[in-house]
Amino acid sequence: MNIVIRKEKEKDYKNIFKVNKLAFGQEDESRLVEQIRSTDNFIPDLSLVAEVDNNIVGYILFSKIKILGSSIFDTLALAPMAVLPKFQGLGIGSELIKEGMEKAKELGFNSIIVLGHKDYYPKYGFKKASGWKIKCPFEVPDEAFMAIELSDKALEDKAGIVVYPDEFMETD
Ligand SMILES: CC(C)(COP(=O)(O)OP(=O)(O)OC[C@H]1O[C@@H](n2cnc3c(N)ncnc32)[C@H](O)[C@@H]1OP(=O)(O)O)[C@@H](O)C(=O)NCCC(=O)NCCS
Image 1: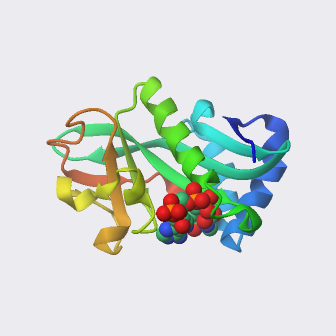
Image 2 (image 1 turned 90 degrees about the vertical axis):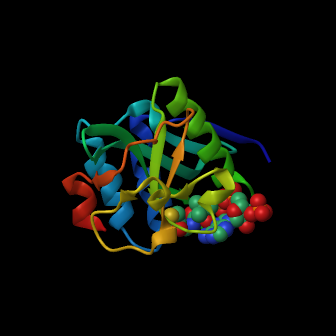
């Protein structure tokens, strides 16, 4: 199976909506993507699709968020990430996340925050955000709120609370 990871194009919007809807079994995440796209937090280079035989089967988005601590620190939120049910467990999610992290690094971002499956993201190096004293603004299980440093000690001394833009709070 040949998996191609590429930047989204405008003509992909409909299929991206579908992939998220089918993967999550609801439209909240599809709508979150549309809302983030309409803000300054959207980074076109970090909105990636996975294609198999020219069909979009997976999607990942990283967008700008902040950590509010002793100062304001710019970081990325990984959300959402989705693979069509029929294509799950084939390594597509893995390709998306690795390519996304590589691209994020190239663009100069040095950390990522994710709220998600506690057994999934640690495969890619994510650790509990609480280890850096980085908190979620709403109640979540400690193991589900994770972060990764893309450069050495990027999150050292970045203790604080993550500020999610309004679009996240509307759908989560
Ligand atoms: C989570 C998701 C994006 C993973 O994509 P995927 O293409 O199925 O993942 P991969 O095939 O690359 O899986 C890589 C590894 O993670 C494991 N894995 C997949 N989903 C997992 C989950 N929810 N929890 C724990 N491990 C998981 C796989 O078994 C595989 O393990 P291995 O490398 O030891 O064999 C996909 O399952 C999905 O769309 N799920 C529904 C939507 C969702 O939950 N999105 C994430 C929100 S946090």
